[in-house]
Image (cartoon, rainbow, N blue to C red; front, side):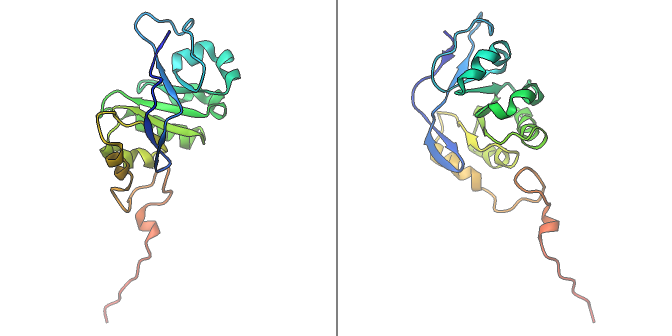
Length: 181
């Protein structure tokens, strides 16, 4: 049986703290993506498991996929609209590859479902993760989720364009020219 944690925990989703309905499946050493048994219920499986067991998992309707930071979002191109949740794993706080994966899922592949950040997810990242398209966050369990929620509103305005803002600040602000007389 794969390694997954069926206990109840909270996540941040769409700006609120909610109970997590999904269990993340992680393969342990020596487990094969081809033959790993996937438990019943809402589960998020690693991409290699999805690729090897796609047909049977697709029929369930209660299976999402998580991508490692070294995997490409394009690998899900054909299934993007069939997945209720896609998670991106941040193996450590300083690994920024997940931001690009999220942006590609939203901007280039048109993914509209739940996009969840998992792994070493901390308050300081949430505002920026939200900007590139994440709408759900499984924060580290050793930190306060209430404090992490505040990270979504650390800044009141952003200068650059992204998924959440299509125009840079200079195009959003009305400018008045003052002519010297």
